[in-house]
Length: 254
Image (cartoon, rainbow, N blue to C red):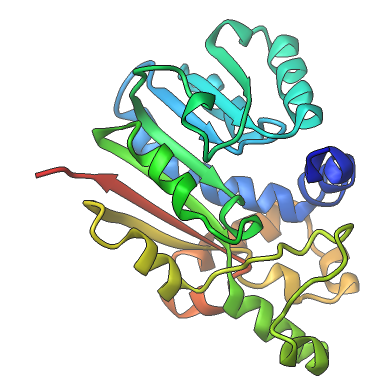
């Protein structure tokens, strides 16, 4: 059984149905809005898109979306959401392995490829990267959001979890939602080097929310928290402590 078939409901409840998930989507959608609005009926590959939170947003913008994921549980939720909104005719659902070329529609090229919160769950991301980038059209966008190892290291110093830090931030509890392979910006830059991807924007996702005390979160509205996070997300000095980093690039093959 896929890991997210086991923890999928727990993941949706604790991430996407809480303010932290709403903030995450707000930053991603703000970053991508200009690129999506430039054209009509873009074809988007949502690689590892799970329950389809971003897929539903793309569909609402008039795009066609191919959503590939290993979790049948999450894909079922994505399909049900699309059917409820009457946009299932523009959504293709594929249960597959992102590292396997047979999981992708033959000969299909995409105007945009999203890979959000996938990198940090796999030890070797390169096979996946090779498969998704070969399907990106020249001039198309590559939206990569990943769990920031530097922020994870920082917050566990705040918590005083020095033994966990000294053990290399290795999570041995499979039921936990903390990813097993968070990456630093330097590691990601090395992964993408030489792939003809020019940076469009680099933003932080949840620059301060995760560091707030629960009582301080509670006395502020979700709307106010989102506005503040959106404001800080583009300020480069906060990138090192942002929980996620959104690296948005354009494929420019010479």
